[in-house]
Image 1 (cartoon, helix red, strand yellow):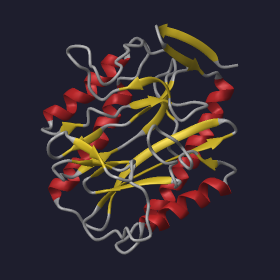
Image 2: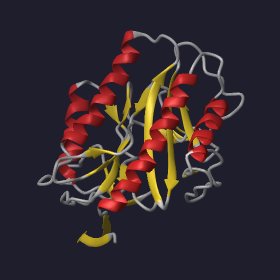
Image 3: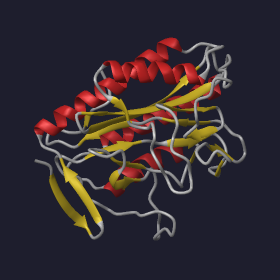
Length: 272
């Protein structure tokens, strides 16, 4: 039975037992298979709508259902797809479309999740389409490494501030900007659970986001997802009420894994 705790006032965290972690691991494996299929299909000329169909087929063929499809957020329509497909200057939540055709040199962040027997897997990866310039590849390499920096800090004895600051310090040393409006999050029986998992930590309280410094405990499960810009860290939401882009149209990258905190160290749930 999931254990519910309140380590900080207003924050409810669900600690998963071994059986529940096994279900989350299977949900994560299905998400990883969807990513594998999308990556194999990536080529100049494919549409983001085609990639969405590929991911949906994999998820449903494995007895799961898409977690993003139909999701709601304030003042927005229900999300209409299985994946988000965010191209070049699009940071997150890009909606797949038949007329959104990928071309040589593009980068695309593909994010997807599924429900499997009541539990969620959630992962994002930024892929290259064909060949890209070295400076573009460096942006992706640094962002991916930042994800693993956060994972490596996710050990019992640390807290969320330690995780956030480890990511922030690494990214800033590389000369890039971090999105400040979006964070990682708890994952479990819902797509978004407590706690929020920021990629940075303020020197003073923030008016816009909660920064609850929760100690890391065995059975916690959350998604770490650095969102990194080559230019200024300013973003805006487009008229579709979902797609978020960099204001200066600079390229950006996004990598995400769902992990579990265990006595043996962090376990990545969303890989094969």
